Image (cartoon, rainbow, N blue to C red; front, side, top):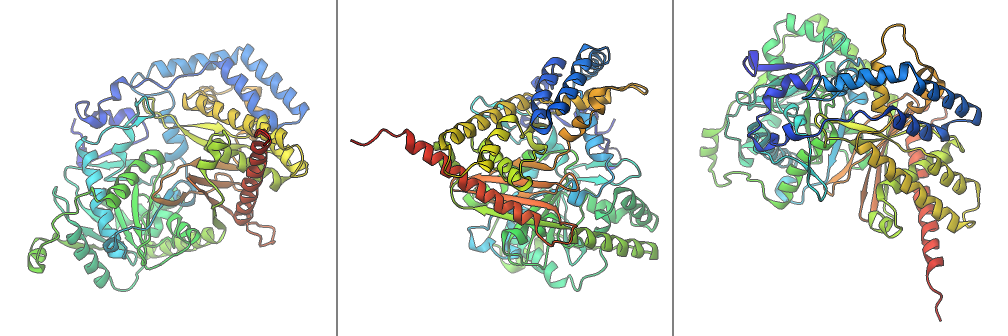
Length: 628
């Protein structure tokens, strides 16, 4: 079978179906055959861990009822039966995992919510240090050159595979083949994902004023100078804004599927294919956001018109040269995308990326430039109505959301390490303290994404951040005077950090609670039921009112995504040497108060970090030997 029938591969969420695209002799995929499989934890271990995680979320009576349900599940017969089914599923997939297809389909491709706000995530790049790359054209041109360099490494398999830690443990490379020349395709009930043949699709699509411009190029990438000429031409000739086809991709997936079917019926198949098969999209926006919060808004959603949200990668450059990317999440996670971002940003800063010939005369440059074609759509009355409806829906969704970036410059990971705490665990504890203050002692389920890509086709596991240890610390901080029991509070802080690190290590081995229980539930057959899964505490324990993730890069000014439940917050954070940055996204209050939940939470985080430092510095001072 041809690798790309009809020029593309249609993907339905099962990584095994695209395994033939991974050439074992290429460096990128050299370790794939030797990666360990995702383990199926023992039923006893997961149940014991589950009880630990729900204790701070329950009353004594609720916990007793939950423990009884867990004990009954362990004794059987259903619990052991489901465990056996799951183990058999894992054994039947020697070239994948028991989870991958379920996760990709049920977690992403089958979900009908719009990808923007609900699925996509963004990176906010720091400003360039090079003068020629600080304008909109210069920044966009440099990012395009660097991105093509990384893409060509992936397409040829010459990209070195990722490794983890000092032991250089190999990591799964499957994600990379879904990164470029790739696009999610809306369909009724369940989407697909397309990878187009990288050997025949080298073009990039540039968006300007809601219009699409196809930049043709061959296997030899364009230089920085060529890109600046092309992008200047597009800026000068794009004209006024027109009705946005791209906003249709912001819709509910079934609504967008119907709109796309109308576009195809109206003769737009070739135009859509040009967009969907592009290496990536490069969006040139008029807007010039300045603050971190303004840039977060503009990257996360923008105005919805100058985007095509199904593309895996959209590089976005604003009128003032600020830039970032927006990524579609279905088939790969943020850590693989951060490797791409690191390559382009570090390479451009350190000038290790070849920007091409800069000595060409104007005549020579014009003679060798590739064609630039504005892609034209045949737009019917039905499509115009769909666009108007999509714009109304999008604008209403934007109006219902808020984002706040809390940049704390009091201290960072350097000071936290002197407190003998893990920086990540410490910041997670600050989040727990902030939410404890916000809810006055009410603990809520908190999710921290933990990657498990040391396993074949591994993606993420959940670290459950709310624990009995975090509750004990938060209660001590909230319910006693700031100057009381400082050494006790410091000990509780370190205990809570240690508990978080312990759970994260378990999660990194894919032995957490959530993925295992998901697999067991999906193994249930019609007519089967289990009290453990019907227990209200079970639903409460995975209702992620606080969804978090940690990613730090010195060349990122921020990153983020949306909340995962209607009354929740999404908190993306970075811990730098002397600062901590939080991107907080949520829905606006509906009680008419007008108070910003995101901003209020940010202020509570800052208070928490200041008070935690006070406790730990006081504890350090008390432990110093008395001066003679």
